[in-house]
Structures are given as C-alpha cells and as structure tokens.
Length: 194
View 1: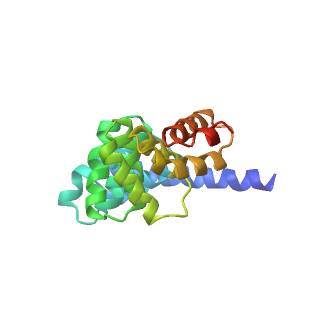
View 2: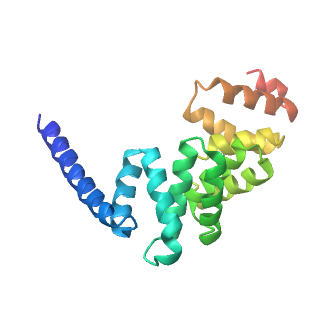
C-alpha cells in the first residue's frame, strides 16, 4: 500500500515536471533545459517516439547552443532510432558519438548492433569487440558479438561469446544451433553433438 502511494507521488511529480517543460517549450521550442528534462524523462520511460523527437531537436539546435551535451544527445538519438527499428537513422548520430568519444560503450554497442542489422559485418564486429573491451563486465555484448562473428564466418572466434550467451540463456535454440554449426566448422563436430 505504501509502495503504491510512493509510486503515485513519483508519477504526479513527473507529470508536473513534464507540464512545466511543455509550457516552457510552448513559449520557446528551443528551450534547451526543457528539452533536456523531457528527453531524460522519455528516455528513462523508454518512450522511444517522444525521445526521438526531443533528441532530434536537441541535435539540430546543438550547433548554436553550446550548452547541449552533443555526445549524450547523439547517443540517445541513435538509441531511440535503433529501438524504433529506424536503423539507418540510428547510424549517423551513433557514429558521431563514437567519433566524439571513441571509448563510449553505449555508442559502440548500439552502433555495432545497427551495423549488424544492416549486414555490415566488417563494421559491426570491430564496434562490438571494442565495446566488449571497454566493458568486459557487460553481458549484453556476448550474443550480438557472437552472432556477428558467426555470420562473418569467424567461427572459432565466435564460440566463446556464443557459449557465454548460452550460459545466460540456456533455452536459446538459435544460439545453441549457431554454436553447434560453429563447432562443426572448426572441426569440433563431436563436441557439438553433445
């Protein structure tokens, strides 16, 4: 009961913040602080349509508004586009973010996945490898990196990542199949049968 009350208070507070920001934008559609507040809320809520719109605006006005964090804007614009399956739209801002901050895990991870979806494996693999190097603790890289390496016919290299992905999701039949094919391709067919 108390948790519901607290959650309700948080929702009311967020609604108030959204209304205030929208009011500021009604007077000035390029109010950076209002756009950033809304962008943050929509990003946390995973409201990708609204997030995309907000970060597109921030990206467009960034050259004349020095206070805009261009790297964060590019990353979030790219992630929102990626989540909405607008892969071509995702690549440009994610590439810009990766160029600005070459060691940014999020930019490289989503850029690698976007390239994978575009079947640009020669670009996907290095992005995903670098993301893995930057954050070796992150388990989200295993499956996309394993798949990219597998699809690029780098079977031996794909196996450790596919194995870790299976450890995380033991019922993932596609990953198990890819691992079995990969093992068979590198002469480990007898182990693949097990």
